[in-house]
Structures are given as C-alpha cells and as structure tokens.
Image 1: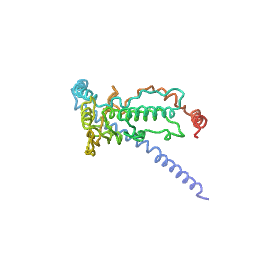
Image 2 (image 1 turned 45 degrees about the vertical axis):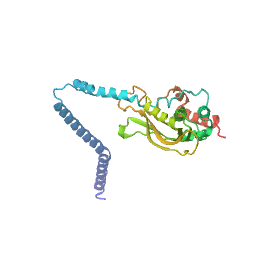
Image 3 (image 1 turned 135 degrees about the horizontal axis):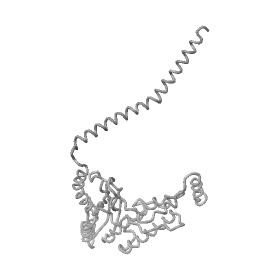
Length: 315
C-alpha cells in the first residue's frame, strides 16, 4: 500500500497519454495531413501562376482569346453546316399525345395496334398480300407488348421510347414499300452505335434487310438512297437470282445493311439545334410527366400503394 498513490498516478498518466495519442492518431493527424496537402497544392498553384506570368508576359488575354476564336469559328461553322446532312429526318417523330384520364399502358396498346393496322393496310395495298412482310413487327423492332407491362405501372418515358422505336421501324418499312419491294422476308434493327473513329459525333443506326426487288426497282432503290438529302449508306449487299427459270420479271433476292447517321453535338458546346442527340427531342408536351409523378415521403408511399392495390388489380 506504500506505493498505491504512485501506481494510481502512473496509471492515470498513462491513460491520459493514451487518450491524447488516440485523439492525435484518429482525429488530429488526419486534419494536419489535410493542411499539409492544402499547403502543397497552394505551392503548386503559386508555381503555376508564376510560370504562366513568365510565359505570357506582355500578352493581353483578350487578344489571345479573340485570335483563338477567329481560328476556331470557321471550323465550327463548317462543321455545323455539314452536320445538317446527318439526321434521322422524321423517322422518330411522333404526332400523338396521350389523352387525360387514360392509363398509359392501355392507351399505348391501342395506339400501337392502330399504327400497325394502318401499316399493314399499306402492305396489302402495295403487295397484294399480308404474308409478304414479317408478321411480328413489335419483336422485330424491339417494341414492348402489352403483356410485357402486365401488373406494373409504366412511365411516359418508357411509352415514348417504344413509340419512337415503332415509328422508326414503320417509317423505314414504308420507305421499302414505296420503293416497290416485292416482298420483305426479314428486317432487323441493330442497336445504335457511336464509333470513336468519328470522335463520337455520329450516332449510326443500321438496319439489316432480306427482301426481293424487281431488277429495275432495286436500281431505283439504290439510286434513291444515294441521292437523298440526308445520310444513307449501304454497308454491304449480296444479290442472288433464284428464279431464273420462272417466266416472270426478274426478281432479285437481296441481303443488305442500310445505315443512317445522326449528328451529336459535343457536350462542351451549347445545344443550339436539335441535331445533336441520337433521338430527336420530344415533339409532345411533357407536362404530363410532372402530373403523374407521385409526391415524396409518406404521401408518396400511400399514393403508390393506392394506385397499385386499389386502382389496378391484376387479374
């Protein structure tokens, strides 16, 4: 018991020292390391400023910027002028607006059925039979069917994207009908690609085709593509003539890849036109989205439950 007070004092001193060491190691050390890093960054910035002052001593920044713009602007104007050649035309445009009070997926089903019915009426008018064109165009164009959205709500963004994809497929197919294609065995829309070889400024949309043409109509079709006011290219083509023994006008079996391109404006430049996106800007009002969005918090959770359970009951 003689050294009890000394032992207690040493223990308290060790505990106090350990607390100080822990506070330094786990709290103050990180702060001082941050100060040191900031000091190194400050020194680096000061050196950079001094170097810039030495390199550009006697030059006025306004004059340098003006000269740079005078060199860049003609190139930009030339690029913008040529960019107008690269567009999808009206392939992705829509002229429909969902009516108020309708569930989007039911309206979407009716609208797509109408678009396809109108198209197949043109197929019968041009070709004289429905079986001369692929039947399940939704699957061909990667468009959602009604059963794909069963038991869930859909957003206007989903509906709009699928309508635009269907619009592209139908308008491209209509171009084939107007070019007097005798029959279309298959049509495949490739995924959009953005080659780095074009500095990511072109979005390419390729369509694979297997179809038949009369010889003279095939020549006209290829000439029409080459004379269009916007970009079309036939990346590859294979021709065969399997009906040589038939006493009919020569029908050429054609396998080909047809590509369109759309100009994509660099992200660091202002969006002055609608030419810079892969998909044209929505032509319809978008206020409907804000009206359909549920509020956040408890009210939002209740509204989502009410829509899912009360308004819609899956059969």
